[in-house]
Structures are given as C-alpha cells and as structure tokens.
Image (tube, rainbow, N blue to C red):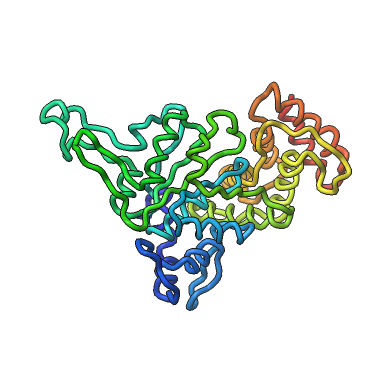
Length: 360
C-alpha cells in the first residue's frame, strides 16, 4: 500500500490503535473498539508501553473529552467553528478510534439529497424485479446504523433544510423506515453520528430547532496563542511532509514563524503586540491555510531549490493564502504589505520585497 497517497486514519495509525487496545484497562462501551480514556489518549497523544502516540488534535483537551462523552449518549455530535479549526480531522480520528472505521462519510453540499442520507435504489434492478434488498443502495449512514459504527456528515450546514431534516428520525428514533420493503432498520449499539459545520456558513441553511436539539454542539476555537499555533503548524507540516515524501526536512522555525505571524495577524485583525489594528480579508487565514502555505513552499523549495524555505518561496504562496477574492481581499493584503510588513524592516525586508513583486 506504499503507493497510496493518503491512508484512512485507522490504517495510517494502526500501530498506535493496536498499542492502546493491548494496554486497555478501562471499560469499553458496547460497539466501541476501546474505552473513552483510550480514545482520549489517541486524540491528544502520549505514550503507552513504549509506543509514542502522536497528537491528532492540539488545543483545549476538555473539548475533546466532551466530544468523546457525547458519543456515549444518544445524541449526535456537532463539531463547529471557523474554517481550519480541525473539525474534519477530529471527526475522522474520533471515528477511527471509536469504530475502527472513518470512511463512512456523507459530504454535504447544496446538491446533497435526502436519498444520499437515507437510502436510494439501483433503478435497473428496481425496474427489473421491483423493490428488494438487492435493489437497495445503502448510504454511509445506513451502513453505520446497520453495523453499529460512527458515521460522519461533513459540512452539514451546506445542505438544504429538507436534507438536514432527514436526520431527525435517525437521531431520535435510531431508525430508518423503508416503506417500499415494509421494513425498518434499527441502529445497532455503537452507532453515532459526527457532523461538522462551518460557522462562516451560518445563515446559508441554518438547522431547524428540532435537528439542533438532537446534537450536542462542540465549538472548536482557533489557536489561542501564537505559540500554540506554531506547535500545531510545525507538527502538521512535518506529518504531511512524511506522507508526501518530500526530499527535505520540515521547514525551519524562521519560515514557520513568518507564515504564522502574517496569517494570524490578518485573521485577528491586529498585530501580535496588539498595537495596530488591521483590515482582515474575507479569507479565513486559518492555521490550516498556514499549513498548506508551508507545505507548498517546501515543495517549491525542493523542486526548484536546495530544500530550504526562503522568503521568495513564502512570497509565492502568501498572497494566494490571504487573497481569495481579488476585489474584497486584495486591498486588505496591500495595506498589510505597506503598513505592517514594510515598516518592520530587518529580516522582513526581503519577504516584503518578494511579496511586493507579486503585486506588479
């Protein structure tokens, strides 16, 4: 499987999961692969019997505990927050630890239909022989209920209200009725639904009160401090470099610090010292965006340099990370270049020069 670009979490971290299971001392809920405390250790990291457990989520550990505890109840778990706050990543790793399967996913969008949530039909078989088990096409959520696993629903708020509301009976009754077969599917123990929602989509398709009551909502914040964001970005970039097999070590602290500084200041609308206010672009400028920026810059440095990220490589990706809408974000980026970066002088001058060249 060495040619697979990205393995699912349960395969990529199989040795860690097995080590945690072997060291298990806690009570394992029905349908789960390990105890809540072991799931927590898998998410936040540590060491067990000589095996290093890499942290999958760096941030408020209490929120992780709340999320895990929610999966032990009859309510769904809704992870929400700004773009780039690791909602999907946490969702995937929770499913991998709890169920040993993270691939039962519905990707929400404006085009997601109720049939993609409940079930649909193989119409050739349906026409030929009528409604039957063989003609039924099971959705990821249907399979999760049938097998007692965690299902994931990405970007729930992007879906139309009628699609969202198809989840109400699944979460409250733990049941999917199939009237065409005069039958119903009752969820097995271990079934749970983990949904994610982007707060910037609020107002696009807000959840009904009936659906919201069936979720416990956990809000994942942006990194609270510069140091925490540095830790998150450094660790994730190193992980991605290993997956992509880039022929270079991870980027140096200097390059990471510059990238985090620029995007964090744009995101928060103020310089790190709080002395100057900035106009923020519509772009999220999240930690995830910083991770993508540095991974791209490192690939650039490997392909067209000696593997060390320099200011010219950062400059090639900074604008694309900060400016997603030319008309609305371009002015904010130019103001940052001229009013903040240019005036810093010193080691920022080369980056300012390179970034300014992108504007001409």
